[in-house]
Image (cartoon, rainbow, N blue to C red):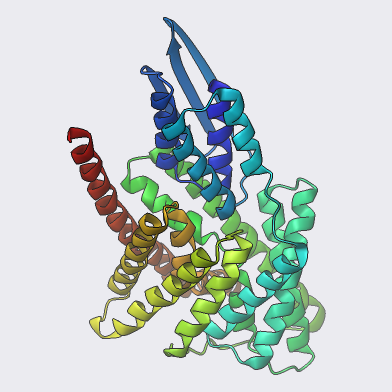
Amino acid sequence: MLDLCGDIGEKLMKSGAEIFRVEESLERILDAYGYRKHEVFAISSCIIISISDDGENKTKAVRIKSYALNMARLGGLNHLCRTLCEEHPPVPDAFEMLRRVLSQQPYPGWVSYLAYGSAASFFTLFYGGGFLDFVLSFFCGLLVRKAVVYLKNLNANTFFVNLVAAFTMALPPLVLLYLGMPLDLDKVVIGTIMLLVPGVAITNVMRDVLTADFLTAVARLTEVLLISVAIAMGVAIAIAGTRILLGSYTIDVVPVEASYISCLYAVCACLCFCFIFEIRNIRYILAAGIMGGCGWLVYLLLSGIGSEIGRYFLAAATAAALAEICARLMKTPVTVFLIIAILPLVPGGALYYAMKYMLDGNGSLFASYTLAVVEYAAAIAIGGSFVSALARLFTEQTRNRRNQN
């Protein structure tokens, strides 16, 4: 039973499950199998399970060394946990059921390439890029996918993977810019950088803090900082290298007023990310994509309130509420929807400009954009956590009423 729970917990964590989901799932399995005295402790890098069996205490620790967001596997594992709690099959049969869940093959390589390229392209349009930027971003997205998969197959660490991927995707538009091609470098880089920006980790840091899971929050914050620095260094090396070899250049940041057509681009980009995150069910894919567009639509409709933080908070709360509703209707983890729905709100542009002005030595603008990243991420996390807390409270009350009846 310890081995079974350890394997399920490890795969849940690696697939993108929240800390509380891992702990609650394992505790319910142990309850279902008659282990009344047990403890489950999980952080992002480790799971410890203890049970008392005939007066003897037994403990198992599982080390989590890598992650690969896989929503299809997460949904399958969640369904497996429900089945184990309801049917109580023998442990050997439970291991066989787990093996079948894990045996599902990922999308073919060409689907993954197409998803990476299309996601980068639509996010470039989302941030105000033109048709040429759209085409170039697709190519840069293919380079990111190739670099990420190749380096991960070599067991390269996360920092190096993101550094090389950022350098690889920033170099082609820089070279084409020097050759005189009329492209918008910032829009191309920002659109493509969304493939690497740890948006989920950024928001999860605040969610972990709000749920008093400080150990996990510190671990995730370290991860966010490392990935952000790696991306910044990769792009900075590409910019600095081309400046040294080809001469300096300056590009003025031209603000683009977001229009309602950007909601369509947000939906398309979110649909592409569904394939990157291995979502299989067509209903889940459509629902997650529409949620992303709805969240951004709320952000646009609230342009008159005058508070960017308030707009991000309410937009994130809307996306989270839709995710909670669909998760309960379709009986799947809310993460499957929420991880996609918040993508258009992730401050990838602010993160890029913070890095750009740091490289240019503009301390005031660097501080301004860095603060914006923190504020927007906090607003998104608090908005999502607020809705999540209300949903969990409602679920617990409903469960208690059923138990009393």
